[in-house]
Image 1: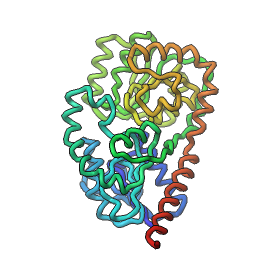
Image 2 (image 1 turned 60 degrees about the vertical axis):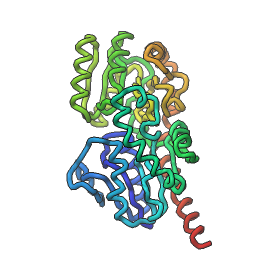
Image 3 (image 1 turned 120 degrees about the vertical axis):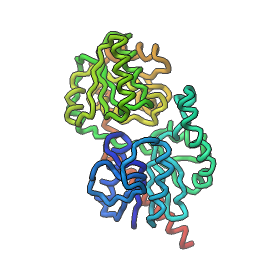
Image 4 (image 1 turned 90 degrees about the vertical axis):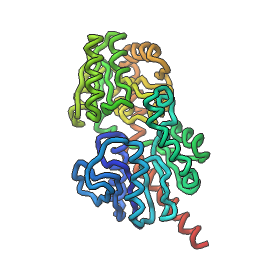
Length: 353
C-alpha cells in the first residue's frame, strides 16, 4: 500500500498542521509507504519524503493553494490519497480518495459580511462548481458535525465524523482548578481569526488578555497593536510560542475566549479545557458541539459568557479536563486508521467483483 498525503502547505504551526503530522505519525507506526504532496516547498525541513510544485515557499492565498496542490499530487500514483485540504480536487481516478478536513472554505457567515472576503472568494466559488463530480466519488471525513453539515449543504454528501487529535496529555500539565489573571486566546495572527474581538472583549469586561499565536500576517498584527493603543486595552501578545511556553501561560489564565466565527473545530479550545479552563466559543463553530453551555453569537453575549466562565472556573475545571481527555491523539490515530483500512479493503473487493 502506498499513501499520498496531500496538504497544501506543510507546517506544524496550526491545528490543521497537527492533524497532518499526527496522520503521518500514524502511517509511520503502521510501516506504510507514503509521500507528502504540497503546493510549494516547505519552509522547514521535516525530514519527510515531500514533493512540491513550486520550488520555493509561498504562504499567500491559502484557499487557492488548496486547489493548486493538485498539480503536485496528481503526478504521484498511489493506492490512497489522504487529502487534508478539505477540497475535492480530482484524484479518485488515480486511487482511493479520502478527504479529511473542516468546514468548506467560504461557506460560513464570516465570509459573507465583508466586500473583501466576497471578492476574494468569488473565483474559488466558481472553481468549486467543477469539483462536485469528484465529491460524489471521494470519501469525506469531517472534523466535526458542523463541518459535515456544511459539506452536505455544498456537495450533497454524507461525511463520517472523526474529531481531530489534541495533545491533551501535555496540556494537563497546565491544569488548575481556580485562580487566573487573564483571558487567553490562541490563534494564528491572521485576519481571518478576528483577533480584534479579543481586544474589544477584554477592554469591555475589564479583564486583561493574552493572545498567543504564530505570526502569519505582519500588517494585521500592526492593526491589532493600533487597536490596543486606541482602546488602552490591557492586552499582551506572545508570538511564535513553543508548546512549553504556552503551557506556562495557560497556568495563569482564568478562562479561554475563541473569537473565530465559523471555525470548523478549534483545537486550542480543547487544549485550554485540558488545562481546566472554561472556553467561550461562537455558536457558529464546531467547538459549540463540545461546550454548548458557553457559546455566543454577538460580542455582547460573549462578554456575559466570559464573566460567567471566570466565575465558574473552579467548579467546572475537572469537568473541562474530563471532556478534553476524550480527544487524545491515540484515539484519533486508531479511529482514523480503522476507517482508512476499511475503505481501502472495500475498494479492493469492489474491483474484484
